View (tube, rainbow, N blue to C red):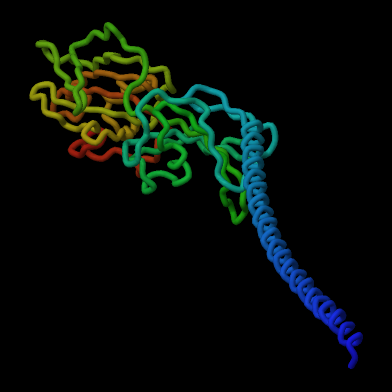
Amino acid sequence: MNAAENHENENNEPPAVTTKLGVQSRVERRNVWWRKALSWWREALALVVIFTVVSTAILVINQREENAEKQLIQWTDIVQVSGQVGRIPTLALERPVSVTSPKSVELAAGTGREIQPEAPLLISVTSFSGETGELLSETGRSVLHIGPATEQFFDKTLLAGLLGKNEGARVLFVRPVKQREKLTTEINVVDILYSAAHGKTNENPGGPLSVTFNDAGPLVTHAKVTAPEDVVIQQLIIGDGAQVLENDNVVAQFIAVGWDDAVVRSSTWTTGIPQAIDLETAFPGLQVALLDQRVGSRLAVTIPAEQATGETDLMMVIDIIGTEPGKKKDKALIPTEKSQNPPSEKK
């Protein structure tokens, strides 16, 4: 090989090597770039998926809230309730209402004691058909429920909607119920009744009895006079609720005390839970005292022995809390006077 050829080979070999090395470098760089691009694309895709899932969840939640709000507006617009709390409400139904879960709304706020779990609770429930608006009570009147505010004594759905409300409130419930294996909607107008008299104070009640209150309930005393020969009724508080009718059950707080010995014969204030007095079985003097009175009233009543149990003249303080149609005699709610329940006529 001559010098020219050697020179030519010296000039040609390095470029050939450089070209080969250059091609490999570009491929490697291209592969690195694609790997990075693929990684970025996967991360971007993951972010898009996460964003889509979160956005969809938010939209679903908002849609459900909007639907619930629309449903609330819808049924509250359909159902119109009027009337005074504590009296039988009037319901107007524009068209049938149907719900798949219980709904409630407070129609009137109360000003009395706040209802707490296990505390005394007295409610008046008036039920209507969600399809026709027809009153469901056979007697045409509200049904009273009394007891501690627990699920043992009250419907779970109603109790949940009443806890935290105040006495004097009216709450409207619309809820699905099963009747004859068919799901239908029932409307309940629930009044939380006061557990004590609620009305206008009578500044001059007259009569022989004086009544004061402490934490344990009423203290009743009488003037230094002979016990009256007839029933004497003193209206301490004048209620404006429903009127007591003949043979009603009168839900009341009461205390009965002997005129001569001041011994308490019976009292509901020991528990704070009102009880029912059946006018059909109550002794005559008590019937006279309660008939035609109005819910919300507080009475101080003097009853001669012959119109009571026959044992002694009685002094009574009675808060009329509610009233409902009486039960049959064989289901009378009034036990004997010796219990802590309302006094009945001695047989």
